[in-house]
Length: 288
Image 1: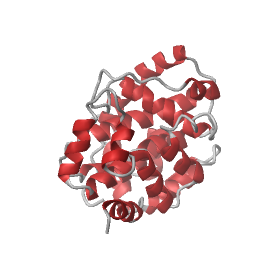
Image 2: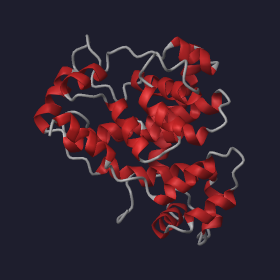
Image 3: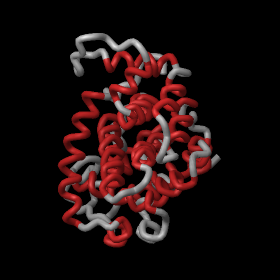
C-alpha cells in the first residue's frame, strides 16, 4: 500500500463529530433557530450538560446563586456562546490527542484553529453573512486534515516537511504536496466529505487556499480564506512569521470588505481568542 493510499484511508476513517455537534449544526443553519431547540439537543448529552453547568457556576461568572438547569444556563450564556462551547468541546479531543511532532504542534495548531474560527465568525457578522455560526464551524474544521496527516505520516517525513516550510520561497501547501502527497486543505475536504457535512462547509475547507475558488465559490469559502490569511498575518499558525499574508482582493470584494475593515477585526480576534480561552476552556471534559 502506498503512503498516499494509506493517508486517504485514514482521512476517510476519521472518527465523526459527536451526534450532538451534528444536530446543533443542523439547527443553527437556520438563521431563525430557537434557543429551545438548542436546549433540547444539549439535554440529550449528559457530558455536555455537565460541562455547561460547570462553566456557568465557575468563578469566571461569580454568580450569587448557582444555575442548575440547562435552560437557565443557555439563557445566561446565549446561543452564540453555546454553539461555540459545543463545537469547541466536540473538536478539542482531535487536537489534544495529537503526538508531539515537528509539522503541527498541537497547542499552536489548536490556537490557530480557535483564532481562525473566531475571525471567520467576526467577518461573517461584519459583512452581513446570514450564518455566522456556520462560519465559526468552517474555521473550527479547516485544520482537521492536518490532524489526520499527523496520525498517519511518519515522524521523519513530518520533520522534513516542517524544515522545508521554513523556506520563504515556498508555501506550506507546496511542501505538503511534494513531501506528503496532498495538502492539508484537500485532506480537510476529504474528512468533512466522509462526515457527510453540508456541501458549503466541505467546499470552504477544501478550497479556501485556492485563489481560483475564493471569488467563485459561495461566501463561506471567501470568509474562511480571508479569516485564515488574517490570522496568519497576526503571526498565529505560520512557522515563518515574517512571511507575508494578504487576503486575495477578489475574496474581499466578494464580501464587500476593504483592507481598512480588517484592522478592527484583528483587534476583535485577539480579544475574543483570549476571552474564549477563559470562557470556554478548549480542554475537552474527561470521557468525551
